[in-house]
Image (cartoon, rainbow, N blue to C red):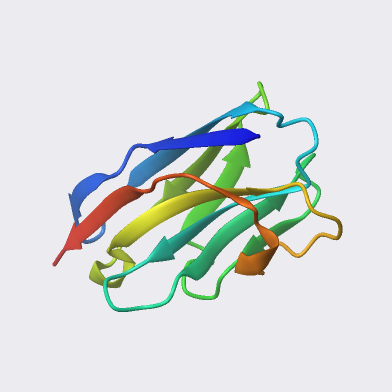
Amino acid sequence: QVQLVESGGGAVQAGGSLRLSCAASGDTDSSDGRAWFRQAPGKEREGGAAISTGGKRTYYADSVTGRFTISQGTAKNTLYLQMNSLKPEDTAMYYCALSNRVGCQLSNVNWYNYWGQGTQVTVSS
């Protein structure tokens, strides 16, 4: 089992920055990839950014490319999402996810089998 706990969300004005953190505990050694997804009210959960274990592969959704950066901590059990140049349309609940399934489908929300509870990000204009 794996437990994921997000932190770092909050309210910010457009153009501002936030850094999200996700602490993982439990059986993380079998992880093949980790990601940040987001879900706005009334919308489906959508991909934001993902990274393979070891960091050799990354994925960014078109909507966040060039503004968001995903990274792993030196302890490898912490995942970060640096969000710059935030826009009101970035407002959503942000979820940390982890997969220990076969294959490496970083952009596929259904590939991930562990999820955190989410942290709210609100961007005002």
